Length: 484
Figure 1 (cartoon, rainbow, N blue to C red):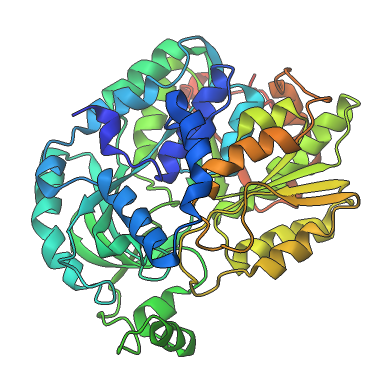
Figure 2: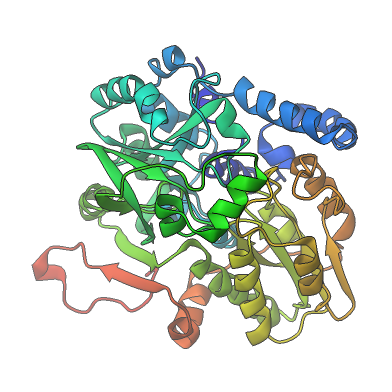
């Protein structure tokens, strides 16, 4: 099997990787970058999806996910090193002043695009078919199905850590036919090392993306944990212990249960999708020391903590260049586009999901930033009126804060959150809506990032930690610039 076949199109790491790689190749990434050669057909057919009845739409969504999911037999052929070669093969072969390795993050992708540098993800999603063997609202039964495939996967990959997740809130439809394995690299693969050694310039900077978000888990083995729920509308306590919102949600879904039955968690771990596994840091430190690169840790408490910093950095950069800086592009989950953002002089603000928590993150940013002339918004529909879902009225209220315009991009407001066509429509809508009159092809120079952080860095919940990797007798007089 092709290495890329193991990764689902809707995997956040894969979608963000494709978007950044396309940008570095000098092009955009329609249809999540997964269907470049057929995206006109996808764009033509997308409206037909929303004309189906809701039940048929949901069936189509589930079947689409199952089509790219792996059977347990296919999972046994998974090769993490082949996948690493697929990752690095997305990027142009040239020299870079820096690179990022680590946790997945949409705001980070925009930072990498501005700097013109690659990002190598630590985490990947492997969707595994169970074909209805696991009841959606009985999360512990998925462990029986997954135990043997998980054991074989970890036996053949001693450098991987497996986070088996079950989120009956956001992923309710998909869990009818599959379960989610997220694997995290505990060490650098040979393909990652080879790429970094060949691509990074002498004296380069190796950034580490470290999201500190953790989640209660059930330990299944030395490198295997089970995570019930995920970051979004419901809290960890609600997933494990229940509560009024869970009871109401299950009643609405036609379930006889009042909570999701499971034992209390016995550990906590890096959050499966967004968290950083610190074991990887040792290999990065060793490689940086060997190649005499600077190692910079970007440490942030939760995924959206990076978003205000990156948005303000873009706006500051545009103003320095005497460019208009009043166009805000709020992007949801994997529906983001670094190429059109920079080509049109938009300021990106990335959100994890379409939940009230993400809407509040955007609202807080709007409260403290100077007013915006125009605002645009993509929304990622998951097909479920989940706990904590932000209503369309809430999103429209936020868009109304654009002084001259507030516009949804590719969103059918009447069908949200079952607007599955938005996964394709967001891209042509972005092309049509954003004016390219103020385009920028210039890259953000490293010293500008350095100056911005020195002047404004303390305003944000993000730490930029330098690790001195040089021998002790050379450690005097460390240069203050992040990139020197």
